[in-house]
Amino acid sequence: MFEDLQFTNPIIVSVCVSLSLVLTPFSYSIPASCEEIFKVCFFLICVLTQVVTDEIMKPFGRTYIPSSYVKYIESGGSRVMPIRLTLTTSEYENIFMKINGLIFIGGDADLETSDFARVAKIFYRLALAANDAGDYFPIWGTCMGMQLLTVLVAGENLLTKTPAENLALPLNLTTEVQSSRMFNTFPDELINALTQEPLTGNFHNYGITIKDFQENEMLQSFFTILSTNIAKNGAHFVSTFEGKRYPFYGVQWHPEVNRFQWYRKLNFPHSRHAVQLSSLLAEFFVNEARRSLHHFDSPAEEESSLIYSYSPVYVANITAYEQAYFF
Image (tube, rainbow, N blue to C red):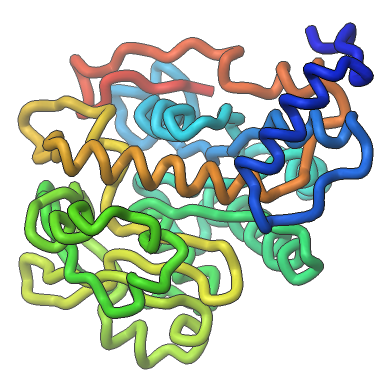
């Protein structure tokens, strides 16, 4: 599709240079060649698939991704690539060098022994090594994805009961929010609303308590707590954090549901501020992914990897999701 584009065309060069300067200020030096500049203009974020555990969805496929995550990423300005759980380590290493960011989504999986955890650990280690070498690569964890990040960093499962199922909550923001990467560009009005209005949808039974977080040297040194909340059982849990040194981010709540899930029996926040919160976080993480210089070797290879090769299935009649991709 793009093979016939001529990189000597001044319009194309101008557009790509402008995008590199506008979208990634202060992130890295502009690539030396026009071909490299063009590659920076096209990037994608990968989503690790989940094993289907609900019997009612098993006829559709072995693994899946709720479409709300796909729409969420696309709304921030990125394309999406699904990552299957059945590939070899060398295949995952090859994929890593072609993608610009990774999201661990919510769901239900063993965070130490499942295929989901095994594959996540491979990418986590690759991301650590890449960032250590100056090769920027961001990871985002939502709900179970955030819990998984704590297991990967701590080297053990420290999760305890923090029931907050079907609760829309404000956040108890810490003083570190003002200097955080995640929230420091948020308008004051939204920051105030975030502390007073129920803008975050919570659908979890386990989490990391503040006490367990602070008593674990690995977690304490790796992440900065940006917000906390109180569970139904009174447990104080960490609800948002970001890496101190690494561009790794976690939210115990679900920003994607604010705009892309509509099941009436669940407390999905759909207010103006809730939608704004979801939009800004999607844009934030996509901007983080723009800082990665990874790319595919050819447009054809890249296009064949995108989720557009699959058709979402309507599942709102059997689940709380509107649609889902099955693999």
